[in-house]
Length: 161
Ligand SMILES: CC(C)(COP(=O)(O)OP(=O)(O)OC[C@H]1O[C@@H](n2cnc3c(N)ncnc32)[C@H](O)[C@@H]1OP(=O)(O)O)[C@@H](O)C(=O)NCCC(=O)NCCS
Image (tube, rainbow, N blue to C red; front, side, top):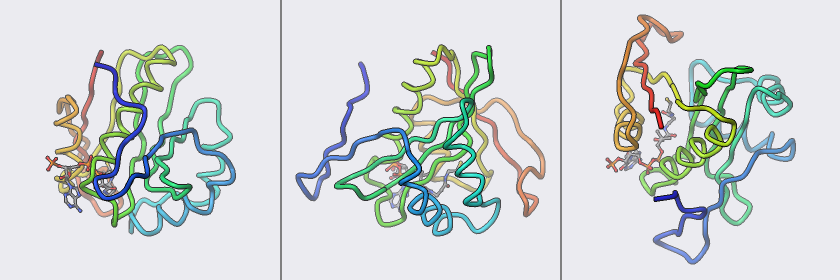
């Protein structure tokens, strides 16, 4: 079944859309990053570079022009594996399906680029994110020891289609 193109809020009539980010989203992307991550944060410069890069795609979930979440995907020229580099949803919006919605849009984008697989790393202590991936059909296939700035391991997940 194809993933829906919009997400209906349980508390209002407004819908959430996913679209490609532009330079106009930069401030909101940086603010989301700062509010979400305390370590391994992307700087404004890195966001700008991803927005301008042909081998990256930044997708944003937006409701009534408010940025609710963002995801960054990396591609390799000629490769058929996409990499989900980052995904985040604003704290006040979590648990309402926005993460799953954004992830489905990432998979659609990767498929459109001809990729057959999506891979990602997640902190070993991030159970909310692990649950999101497992529910979406990702399987754990490896570990990177002491991958993050604070020495935490990364679990490696992938999904093929
Ligand atoms: C991981 C993340 C993107 C998920 O986004 P989300 O919009 O909450 O995702 P969903 O609502 O689609 O579902 C995620 C799962 O986590 C649960 N969850 C996550 N945060 C929650 C919260 N604050 N309250 C209640 N449930 C929460 C959801 O209930 C759901 O699990 P379940 O359906 O099995 O109960 C979000 O928690 C986030 O931005 N976390 C911080 C950044 C991060 O860890 N990114 C991933 C790095 S790999």
